[in-house]
Image 1 (tube, rainbow, N blue to C red):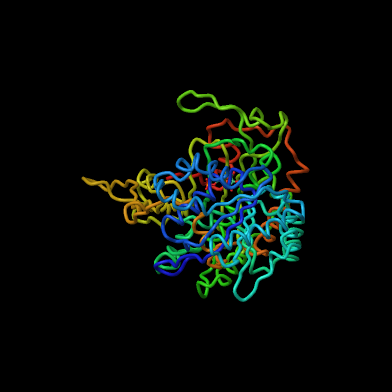
Image 2 (cartoon, rainbow, N blue to C red; image 1 turned 90 degrees about the vertical axis):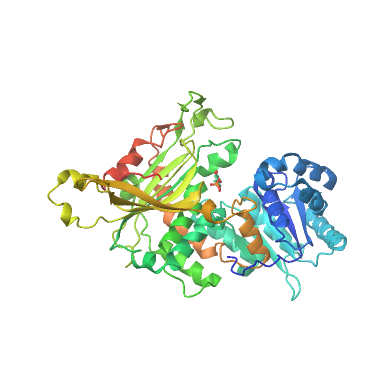
Length: 506
Ligand code: BG6
């Protein structure tokens, strides 16, 4: 987490991106590097080397990056700044599994160090399919590219998904630890880099009144929704293997939940913060097979239509998807936390593709007061709403609180009103941020706070493994149970209705 103000310039180094020709690099990583450079947050001696299987030279790679960059960066794009930085991008074609490529990379990096005056600090960013994570780390080590000295650091960022179950996550951690020490490993979850997710900590721990009521005595339940309007797009092969549980719940939703529920850390040191988040995850009781059938809901989008009548195809008809696929594109679940603070407070998590809107929010629903003064008037009591604190992660980042107020005029009529804080009203930002900017910057500065420790990943899988097991043994005959452009299967509504609640949206 960047704690110093104003921020320092990230040190001279080479960022080596494996998977340089892929979508993540084009859409997120290069724009994030551009945003950092144009805000003056990178040393002028930060270069980038892309590695991928496609054969091309650096010049062709630069041209391919330049093609769509404006649309990926958005409003903050400045052609002059791009032109001033593009010659710091290089490309090397190589086979991720071939030892020779790593020897070649070693000499290539020395050459770039000489050309750009970079001092031998290397950040390896693995934006490849997960099956390559282990082999790349091992080959880097065999080529002698992972050893640090007093003056030169070596770091590795591992993209998600980190493993596909508990066993594979443990194996990957073990493989990485043979080549890198834990302090060199940065397991990324870009949700932890989002402003609003970090602001949950600032809001909770920087405001005495908030923290005083942040517990089971005052809070009824918590909802975390990450809804996407897009479908699977062109990621069929990845998504068919992953599904919404592995793609979203295993990382982004549990990460947000751990920030909402963590105890105040003793300091803003990385370990203090990460330990508190791990404690939350450890306190979530794993679901029994029976609880999996009652407290988790999975779904897959069927054909549906937008409000304007445009038809959206079913997941099973998307390019590259099996016609009988049972991969879930929607998950909702209820989790509890066995802790003093959260005893009896359900946390409801929901995520899905092809929802009517893209939005991510946390809703904290407070308990209602005794409302004694309204006892005699059933009508008035009916109008009283519980206080909902809504933390909007995206879009329209901000925080609002719903409360009851008297309607002006004769009589005591109650109506629901809202107080709100909108980021855009208070802060100006020259560029937009996807979360990757913060995380790449932090990694270059050696700050692991917003990255996941090996044990965090394993605890998440421990929690999800019983769900994966139960789902495998109870595959329903047809999981295509919600129309594209709807809020998911009706069972997800029933999950909350059973407890007397409903999903909220600001
Ligand atoms: C990624 C998932 O990690 O997050 C995608 O793999 C998903 O499936 C994306 O679309 C959502 O990120 P954001 O920042 O757009 O909410």
